[in-house]
Image: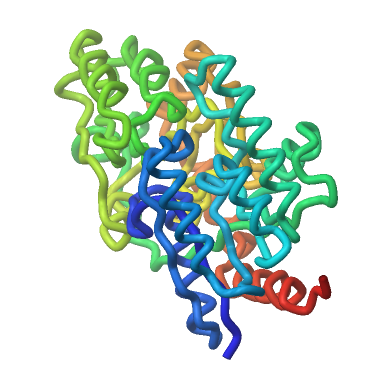
Length: 359
């Protein structure tokens, strides 16, 4: 039996795009005959304390020699010494969702330390896999993957499309326009920018549904909810919290427009999911947004630009014909979206090449 280990921080069932990628990877490889052992590390990654580093070292030291280890970058990039110490006896395959040093809100010293550590850790890996061409380009510019990185984009499941809602020139025939944002409420996801962009448009009928963890970054989540109240949007914005993956399709099905105001993304799986559900999109130009929306399925704005986001949202909220043209373009992208079977096949190639490596 072909075997590998997935090493990651925390719980594999954590509701975020990166962990969802990891879950589907495990599911796909096991379905293709691989034995995949999951090793979870405890601690506050990517800033583990001494106890978390010791636990990680013990967990890695317990792995058999010659194990092929897929190491999620959220932990791997912060464990340079462990990565280097075991580089000769383990076959490290680093999975980088995005460079740790580019997380929003880091102090300059923290960012510099993370950049140095992740650069060392990736140098100890035999293979580096990233989830987008954008991330591959970042690693190259940051000198973090000297031998290059393999791009394996996340797949996207194609759901059955719901019956189209009846519309009038100004919006749905019944009730306000339903806006959907699927993102953990953390500083990087830009919820405050979205709220400020929407605040002057309360004369239009809309409701914003925010689906994503409110506990991953409690301080930012509390500030976002307070901002909604201060802007007079407390009755317009619904905070649903984290939602199980199998409940997400219902949110997409009820939505009329998808919005993602992230300040930075490695890929942006929810954008592909929105397109798969035939939703027009307004998003920031980061991660894989440009290639995903390149066919006119949505409008891209610079990250953090409140005025540009408001300008992009205004016709989507007020002009059903404009919104419908983007919806049709979204539907046209469905058959071009990446698939999970293709991703699993690419991963098998990477793992088999790692196993075949001679020391």
